[in-house]
Length: 291
Ligand SMILES: NC(=O)c1ccc[n+]([C@@H]2O[C@H](COP(=O)([O-])OP(=O)(O)OC[C@H]3O[C@@H](n4cnc5c(N)ncnc54)[C@H](O)[C@@H]3O)[C@@H](O)[C@H]2O)c1
Image 1 (cartoon, rainbow, N blue to C red):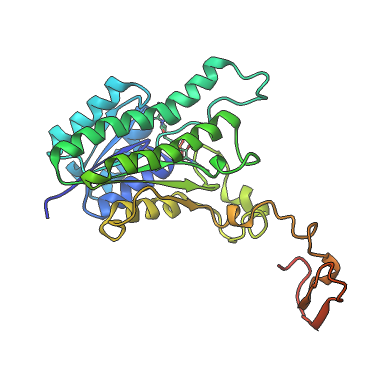
Image 2: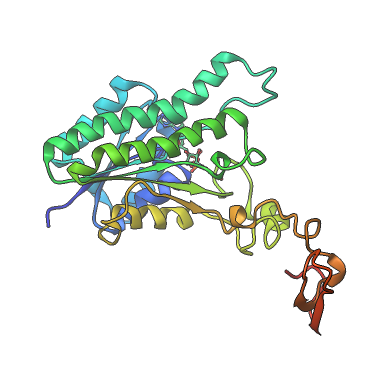
């Protein structure tokens, strides 16, 4: 099979950078489209040391600009012959503060970088992939912020909700051309974007985040590599949450609702308001705070 080409936005840093490494390992030629030339230079140097050579290159791109994004895609095709995969990983935290105070231009900037960019990428990658006639795979970066209000910044989270639904819309529209469109929805991942170290995350591990390991870029990059690969060839329109179980755990009201902490450590059945008493089968030898 001919070598395939992937364009990764935000590929200079964090999860985009980890995705670039994964895709190079899988045999793709990769073009990094990012705004930060300095960080991209460092990434290219490191990747060259790892043996990537001419298989990886950088195009300075502002993904919120249609001419920039279109030119980056054209450059990838010119250099490598095809565009087979697009990963929309570029992102910023964007506007913060109460809704009553956020400046409209900061709201717009956030949406431009996070959502308008994904539309532009889908538009131009879709055109190129459709014309090639050999299908394709696109992965967008959502966020668990899209799924609940108590997770992240408001404009960021709403834009990411847009990205996740745009993923489904594009998957539907592009399916006849065998162009698959999926998303990853990361939880808390130690990247320059959130500026937290694995040590900072320790209090959350095993509590807010059920899995007791800190999220690192490669956790997400591996899922992206799966979604663009052969084993995912029947998956489209899917948003895969990669969060160590944060959203599965939900608001963690178990002690408050229908789960008397006094019963922690017992096994039995509560028969509600039927008038029949609860049955306790046994007491376990478990540590305080266990589930
Ligand atoms: N880190 C997390 O915990 C987390 C959680 C959920 C979702 N995400 C999302 O994952 C994606 C990757 O984030 P990360 O944490 O790896 O961040 P990061 O800051 O390490 O990398 C993001 C990259 O995007 C680039 N970028 C920003 N604006 C750009 C623009 N206008 N044009 C081109 N490139 C631009 C930056 O230069 C940077 O290289 C983002 O979409 C982010 O919103 C991150």
